Amino acid sequence: MVNMDYKDLANLIFPNSKEISYYEEKYPRRDLKEGAIVTRYAPSPTGFMHIGGLYQALIAKKVANQTEGVFFLRIEDTDQKREVKNAVSGIVKSLQEFGIEPDEGMISEEEEKGNYGPYKQSQRKEIYQAYAKYLIEQGKAYPCFCSPEEGEEIRKKQEAAKVRPGYYGVWAKCRNYTVEEMAEKIKNGESYIIRFKSPGREDKKIKHKDVIKGNVEFPENDQDIVIIKADGLPTYHFAHAIDDHLMGTTHVIRGDEWLSSVPLHLQLFYELGFKAPKFAHIAPIMKNDNGNKRKLSKRKDPEAAVSYYEEEGIPEEAVKEYLLNIANSNFENWRRANKDKDISEFELQLNKMGVSGALFDMVKLLDVAKTVPCNTTIPIIIIPNIFKLNFFISSSYFYFWYISFLILYCILCFICIRILFFLFCFCSWYQTISNIWHWICNNSI
Image (cartoon, rainbow, N blue to C red; front, side):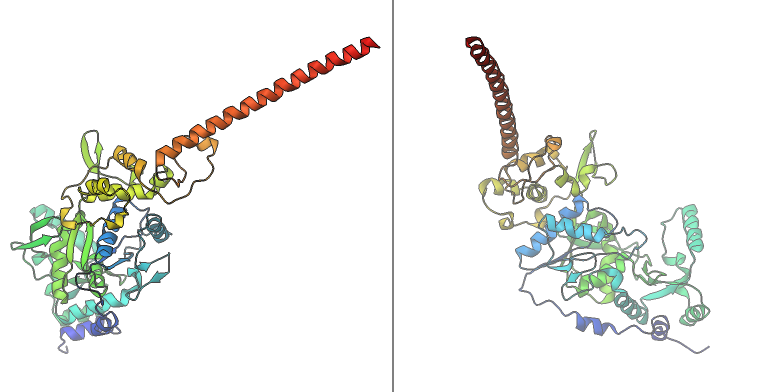
């Protein structure tokens, strides 16, 4: 057998991929002022927009605007089995309704704006494969030929041995194949995926400073995670590292369920030769459920859906102000001292955000709605909906005008009833007088 090296293996797997220098030149560093922050909202199109997603997007947009930076919308749709039809349109529409339009990124189901696209990960396949090829050339990634059945067998053995699950160390059997063995398997038509060859050790620790959580410590990542799946698309871990590098993201603002992935993500950035962005992990929005705190649930809680607030007639501005109050506790005092100012003038500080989840208080939100200026419009109140708050408002004081319209409606109804009663009485009197007059005339003759 002819001796091969990792470059030969990479060319065998990705014969048509471009050099990564092509993409580094295609997506140059952004020309922004010093200190400008570039953020993104990067949801998966798997259903309706969650209030937690709106919260993340609002914060990301706010900190970018404060520094004359950029906020973009990227759709992470590499898990296409879970994709929901028209979900992207729903996300775009929700952001527009709440005034959180991106500076770049998706603006409809298929349209986008900006110079760093495509902004849908499923359309960036060739980019990810180029960087996967680069890692294979460096000996930092390899093809894995384990079938799902073999993976399940490994998991059961780990469970029986009471060790950590995963593909690492002695359990990562494909990482020890020679280049020639790997090439032979590929030429024989064996199916494979691409795994990252982690240089980490679980017994070592890494220290990291999160913008919100502060100093955190984790074991190093030693898992050989999948970076390219059998369908040629990347996993989230691999795709986000490449995208945030090429798109110039300076701050990754996301839910704290991703905090435990920081060791892996930092490792990927380092091994790819990228400068890692700053990470800011937001605590989830919680709900009091019979004395127990839990995350707002898409399945259990109607208020988890962004559409709920429009249906209940709660102004978008009220929702945004309430979320800013959750984000920074000093917002309430700022609003009290600056009643007529727009929220864009409030300076949000990531390092002042709470590290534990705040309770979502609907009563507090409705209190905020009473005094928040709103710029939407109100149609005529329809009787069947008179006791539902599912209409738009244009006043500065939500409940003041709502009660005023109800009172006006009642007054108009009362006046109409009085007029009808008067007309009825008048007609009755007229008929009686007419009959008397005819009687007098007939008798006088």
